[in-house]
Every structure is written in C-alpha cells, then in structure tokens.
Length: 289
Image (cartoon, rainbow, N blue to C red; front, side, top):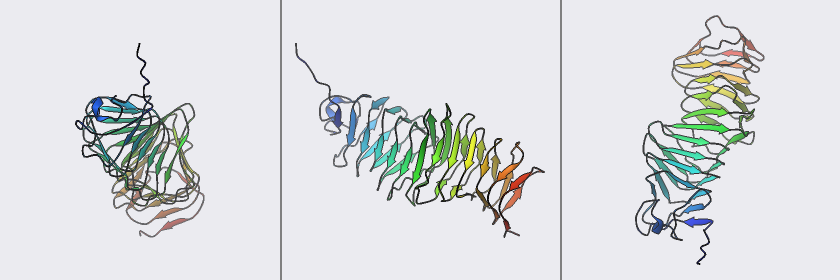
C-alpha cells in the first residue's frame, strides 16, 4: 500500500491557471487546507484567485504577489504576512485570520464595498507599509487580548469594530511610532474594549460608539471628520480630546460625566453636549472662537 506524506507547506506556481483550488497550480500538486502553510511568490505570471471557500495555516504574500478574493471566505488558521497585495473584489468576501496580521514594507490591501476581515490576533503596520483601507470593516474578535502597532505613516483603517469577549480587549501599542488613523467609525461592543497606550494621536473621521470599555491612558483622540458623534459607555474615559472636525461633534453619551482626564482642545467646528456633564482634568483650550 502506497504511503503519501501530506505537505506542511505549499508554494503557488500558477502552472495551469489563476484558480487557487486547482491542485496543479501548487508545487506539490495538492490544494491547501487549514494545516498547510502557503507562500505566494511575486515571480509567477498567473497570480491566485480564491473562487470558492478556501483555507490555509500561515499565509505569506511576497513582494510583487497579488491574492484576489471574490465573494467567498478565506480562513487563515494562524498568521497573515503581507509584503505584496490583497484585493477583495466582492461585497461578500471575508478573510478570517485566527492569528496576527503583519502588513510589511510595500504591502497594500484593497477592500471593496463593506467586505470584512475578522482578526483574532493583533495587527501590525510595519514601516513602509502602504495599507490604505478606504472601504470595508476590520473586526477584532476572540477571547485573547491583542494590540495594534502602527509604525507606518501612510497606512490607515476604514471602520474598526471590536467584539472581543471573556474579558479580552484590543490595545493600541505604546511602541507605535505614528498616529493610528480610522477614516470611518470605531464601534466597541458590550463586553469588549479598547485601551489606548500609545502617546501618538488616535485620529478618527467617523463616529465613536462604545457599549464596552474605552480607556485612553495616553495620547490624544483627535476628531477630524465632518459631523461626528460620540456615544460612550459608563466608565469610559479619554486622556486628551481634540475637536478638529469641520461640522458638529455631538456627545450622545448617557453616562455622567463624560470624562476627559487630560486636556480639551477645540480647534474648529461646533461642539454640542446637550446639557450633559463633562469632567475635565486638565486645560480647556478653545481656539475656534
């Protein structure tokens, strides 16, 4: 009886087509599953397309490579390392990453519509990354506490949603070298949390809605959108808060007081509290008039 040793790593060749699910497109003649590490090199003429649900263990996308995911699910059971490109080309496309996402120098990620990336680990924008998420949602979930590390000046998120549980939270790492930018909304579900430890700005162009635990221990949250709203939960607090939006920023918080442990700066726009109470531990600076 012949014995076949299943590989622990596959490299994409694209010998036959662009179809991820065709065995002859992989160097050892099998299609990856959740136990197999996958490497996508940048040197192949035919780059892979995920055209039905797919899985792998660790996924490495090398410089010059592009992985396209249409309206299907790609499950990465460990880490996703990106030095090339990921393009999600369909509304219903999903990536589930059960480890960490490392966006390395030269990487880019394109999301169309409201496609989603679910991340059970952390996220790193390394120096030289150029991941500019203008659409879609990155959702941080799972029962383990993880961090975002931002060491890229040109990378940003669109919408972030945090749905961690069992006491876990998402942190913004103190070793970040650049501000973290969220061009859309920040949503924190009940039982989850965001803890900010970075001294760099957290720049938000959309709304903040927290039903969980929002704690800013360092740095400044800077509102830079048009009309923005802040719906905060009881016990939530900011370190410093800057209003730099072009329209009206409204505090909808039902908890009393709305707490800023450091300074308030009003640089532009209109700030509306609707008779709510704000606790400010530092200075109040209004240069908007």
